[in-house]
Length: 407
Image (cartoon, rainbow, N blue to C red; front, side, top):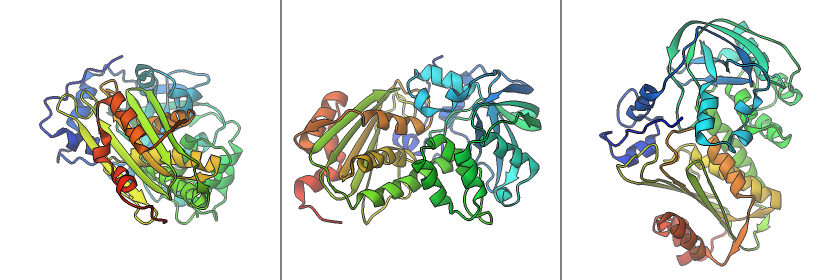
């Protein structure tokens, strides 16, 4: 199922679209013209009622904040649907298959104030019960009407059509004890709850859901967090945690190169002996989803122990790239300088969320290759992409021209 791309006639510079990714609406329009073309090209199947096994899955919108759409998602099938939400399994599938799976999840929602978790209505408690389930749960949803098309953006996973819920029922089963424990601990701070869940081996997508639904933290401060925002928040929290851990480790013992090529995304990582510095370079090549044939877009962000990037130009992929690399350094108990390059090709024709960034980086980190220096890294990347990224890299200038500064 390949969706036709017709973005070459979009009357905006490619770097604007690559930076915006339909999230900031930098063009000034109320709807992204690139995504509108995708919507039109899809042959959507609308239904009035959904009966199926939710993975479990939920989505919280950001439109009209602080009143947001909240609700579950389920396919028109029963059985073990956990793979539909499990990013560690989805990452091994072709892009067409991922899209088909995710678009088969029908959303239901009701409009709630973001402060609702402080005194949850019965509907929200039902959603909580669904999310706490340890396995896929049978769901029945009846719509008043279908009000939305597909959910597509650069941050969160895609979803199929959605509608306002008239009736929502679900079966009851065994709860995930790790999630349930932090949910009922209303004195545990949200930051500490996220770290605890991660330390206990709870997958990122499950942590993100309970964070998004306002199920963590002090009961007086709990809030609903739109899905796209919650993903970056959890990435950022865990990155800060691991960064604080690795700063006291010894330097890594050499110069190392990692790479992975999947779903039209090419990732190149370089770690080297240094105090913490991190640079992320993201390139949208000719034919890729946000730029089409209008040109190439390259964005760069840099941070160190003193200057932190809070609102990166490339969006949530900055944090989704950083987190697994910091986790890797923590696992080997070393600190290092980090340089990561993402080069996106025309095979990535529709955004599926930053989860694929995180999972692809994890796959890259499984294979470590020793190299001699930073010039070797940029030479390898140039050979594979045709772009000499050292001219865009602040880390390259630091390593080549400055003495090392301890942070």
